[in-house]
Length: 436
Image 1 (cartoon, rainbow, N blue to C red):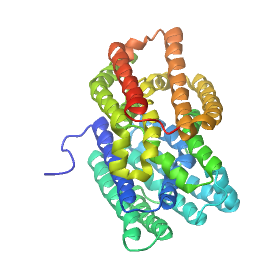
Image 2 (cartoon, one colour; image 1 turned 120 degrees about the horizontal axis):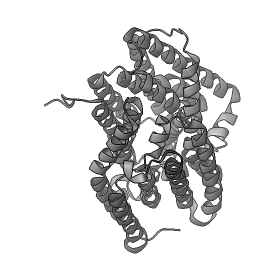
Image 3 (cartoon, one colour; image 1 turned 180 degrees about the horizontal axis):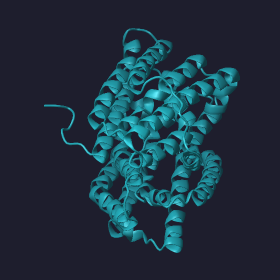
Image 4 (tube, one colour; image 1 turned 45 degrees about the horizontal axis):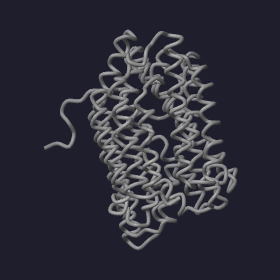
């Protein structure tokens, strides 16, 4: 029986791809803990993802959301040239950022991680330069509607990712050899991608594309800062890769939530059609998954300390309470008002709200970390995300006449939210006790 489903759509293929990625990365984290790899080395491994996230989140979402929108608007021949230009932009960007980081030296790690000294910093830089292209390859395959190729790519890439992470430790080597293994894997993946997309070629892109990409990229910058700031604050306060490992093992949203809602968002913004039909589609898709996601989230809130002890060993039990707080982000994720705002191209207002969200997150994080440690940092992020979605929903109603019930099943949402909050309180304060 094939691992790849025979009948695929744009939504299902992206959901399957993200399920593969999350599952393989979660398995890697579990195995690292059970192999008794030191928290310091696990923290160094987690910094790989943080580095790529911080240096790419502010433009990848903006650029490739516009790519998906354009995929249904351009003639095939023109679209191929358009993708070639985007591919060249990705390569030039990764190389340019790599040169800047190399020039900054140790200052670069302090700016990005809050840590004064990061082991093998130059290897991190090289890994970033080689890995950025392959990490966005999914968008190229999705835009070209190569759904089965997307899933095979994900399965093979992340299988090799597990091997490159674990084998160096199993063979008696250390963290440096793991970085070298990932550099080799990224180089091979980049070669494969280049064979498919061709050598870099710049044919120019119309100004409207750059304008739209720039506006969405700015929104992505502001929207991604809370997550980037959280890890930076932990590093700055603790100056410890071990503490970063504890925080990042807990700072995980429910994978199924990200897979389902993230896929709906990307596909909806790329589809053409009347707003009324798109609102109905969003509501139906959310309704389909809400009950199962609520039950799973509530169960995890009740059992997370025990589950973390089993899957990640006792050294990461503290991470479970951070994880419980991050599970509450589902209360804002169900609200896809930002998807509607993008379809309406209300980028200026979105960016103003996102800036306010960043300020709220920074102020609350710095304040609450003094009382509740890393849990306080997570709580600040939950509050900031809720603020953004509430403001967007009010604006859509006041300015566009779009009611919340048109794109969200309100009764189901209120019931599911109440259930999750009750489970959070019982799991975090009754069955188990917050260690703060």
